[in-house]
Amino acid sequence: MAKTARSESVSDVLTVKEAAAFLRCDPKTIYEAIAKRQFPGRRVGKRIVIYRAALLAWLHGEESVQTEGS
Image (cartoon, rainbow, N blue to C red):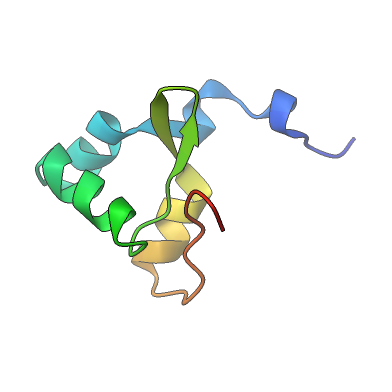
């Protein structure tokens, strides 16, 4: 069975605070990088979320950064 957005587990999605803790940086750094489209993040309602797979791909230097609006 193929995964859909609804079948993503909660642990597959990080908040900005969780991503910052994982990277050991200030959440403000994450917000700024997302605003500059240098970091993978999406707005869902009033929240910004980061898919764990996208964060790991970004850490491995993959060029494609999926940000809100892209």
